[in-house]
Image (cartoon, rainbow, N blue to C red):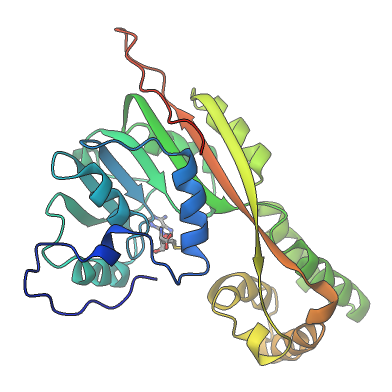
Length: 287
Ligand SMILES: C[S@@+](CC[C@H](N)C(=O)[O-])C[C@H]1O[C@@H](n2cnc3c(N)ncnc32)[C@H](O)[C@@H]1O
């Protein structure tokens, strides 16, 4: 999450922290670091950052492309956009935040050299290939797309514990819903296949492990990375939320049995074939 801004005497000059990824963010920043390993970004580029949230990595990219470029961040959450614009203030006039659903963005946004989306691809549901096709239409010929998401395998040790407990306690309906949730998560292989099916070339899909630290009990149940996302998906499998609460308290006590808790930071990167002049942008060498 972006730090809260403090008033600046020269508001149009971005503070140094706005030009970097937030240092203390334990989730978005580690994913964005992986995204940037695969992204070829140059001064002057036009970049569309989908599911931009509060501006990771839109602010960093705005600094990289400079005033000759442009960055458009889109998100469907109005509150996020208000926050991003407040953080931006007068900095980076070539960066704009727009409201929009990644699955049906308006054509007037124009064409972009690059499309990025940190922690985004899991929201391209229900038809991820279709949603990919939609955003690729915003890419210029020879342009690059780089998205990240927590791929299948993320927190598997936790999910195995949840599954065992549901089975032991005879939570049949809940377990069916839980299985459907697990099956719906995209894998790295899915991402590769869908990118190729969309006509993208030089497809690279890579996974980088990330260990999430937690202690049992309350710290696990209200962990900022797990609650408001992953754990809520388990709660939603229960019709009775009091039963869910008791079940999850037991899971929280069992934490030592499913450590380490590992996420897969999946990066899916690919290029749209160049135009007829054969002009194809080249990817940056891997660091
Ligand atoms: C996990 S956050 C990531 C935000 C930011 N990119 C980051 O790395 O911190 C996902 C964001 O995607 C947005 N989002 C979810 N579904 C979306 C959709 N269909 N269209 C546009 N934005 C969406 C949410 O509002 C949220 O801000």
